[in-house]
Length: 333
Length: 137
Image (cartoon, rainbow over all chains, first blue to last red; front, side):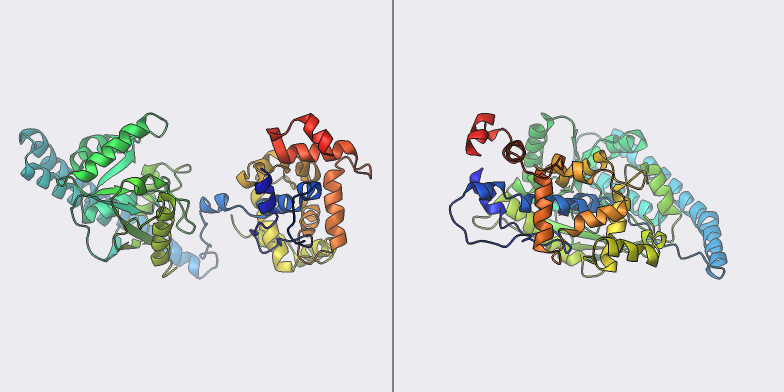
């Protein structure tokens, strides 16, 4: 306790408005009562928290500046709305329905008629899932650019990506059928999770179940070791964030003892804000919003696999991967 | 969130600036106003206790309760004045006065033995017994 207090006298500060030394610094000497009662750093921290706190920043969705407010731009915008809702949306919706029908007619026979767990069956299912995701992406006119080497299916590797919305998963899945660790959602999403994603080898967890963690940990380890399994994709943040600040990664992904391949996904906000505020909108509403926008433009970078270095702790490893992902994301903004 | 600064006129900003003895620049006051509006979620004109306590980094501060008594219910002008003490441009005298006010929370003009024990209690929590604190001071 005493050491904490002594070190807090030199605490660096959070903000531009506030300075670290509101009282003149004195040369360090043995701790006296006066040091103990010196509340200035504590007060400074409190004021710092009042002025700005990092937690709130991550979950704010930046509302777009309205640009259609004057007499010239407004009719153009109206025209845009008509095109988007009247023309694009029905087309996209139709594509989606057709895609689903094609998918189901192919998927269910393969699932239930071809017996056994033979490789051909898994291969077909995988391809079908990829195709379905491509249909989804087409339904919002997704313009996605992939950079870097495509993920390979090898054991002892795990992929981590930043998370903005459920569509991150769909975008990545379109390229390679990953296995994910996901929370079970209610509604039609849950139905899809249960029937289709099982085939890709997904792992379920329940955030509220404490015992679940060990079980899930074991399942993760098993999955990674088996070469036939699809590569595992983890979203360490665990929640959707607005792409500008990074919430601390959960370190579970980094303790598996394998190579960690970071994937950075960055959405171009000009066309649509892909941030899904899951408290404000249901997933269906979010999809409808995407389908009535012009396009979803994003870049996906597949970065170099990172390995735990000598003497690095799991937390340091987490931080270095996180900053690596952040660097490539902030190449443009 | 919208443009909070559009609700503040130039006159408002100058009035607030004068009230805090010009310790903040106009841009800083605009930013503080955005923050104030963000904290005052029900747009009452002041920030209530529970809204301060909803800031995670604030609620874990040992002196949060003591500060709350000073900062609860302040309107924006007073809020800025309160924070101006922390500015690098504030005088040493002002800062010492502030610390004195934190100790002498009921404003009697003197820091009593009871005040010192209370602050020490806030800072040390349960790692010292009441007797130990009294002996220390």
